Length: 301
Image (cartoon, rainbow, N blue to C red):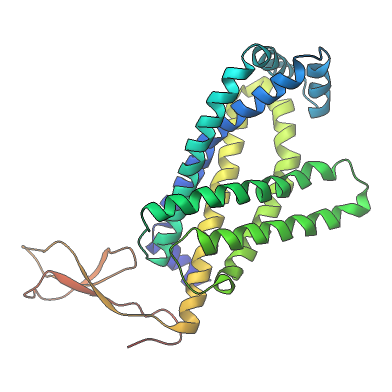
């Protein structure tokens, strides 16, 4: 656990998680635009649709009025909203995948694959969207099923999440080792994601129904951002767990990296995983530094 925590800080895990959370948050806006456009098509021929939707969501007060007004607007501009929303969703979706790829490559200390990463991102988006929606939908569905079926839904959601995140770790990053090397982190991420889903399916609707009248949209936005921030950190922590376990079984390499020359002081001697200088030695003839990677039980020559 200490090695995982140290490695998370060394590779800038907080910034990587924040990038994932921010890109995901921005992708919610075109996603909501598509969802509202779809609701506009559904409500165009049914005047009672808005009332049933508000009752089904358990909304009241100002939040119910906002949903009703949004549906009225969506009915009038559903075609344009669907086109703009789909285009924005494709663009923002690639941004989310790019943030995930950058985080995984940074944790594994690998470079990207250029255009290949874009092609992998498009392929991943299609399958991941289906798995993600199926896994997320199990939470709300559980509210309409008897109590004895709840454990089955949790197990089913965990299984879908584990498949999704194992596939994510295996395909998005420029990594190696096969799917088994990425399974421990995927299991950790799937467990955390299931907890977030259960909390979100209970807390977020209550927040929208009760707090929005007092705090406006800020309360809901804050709750979503907090949820995504935790999710982003879980993604990075899962990847770090995979790397630390890989090094414990297969060892590490020692390489030499370049850093800016220190003209008015001793030259650097070692650096951490992120390239930051850790120690200094007497000035030497070169501007390179040997990065010592001694994490794990074994070490390659």
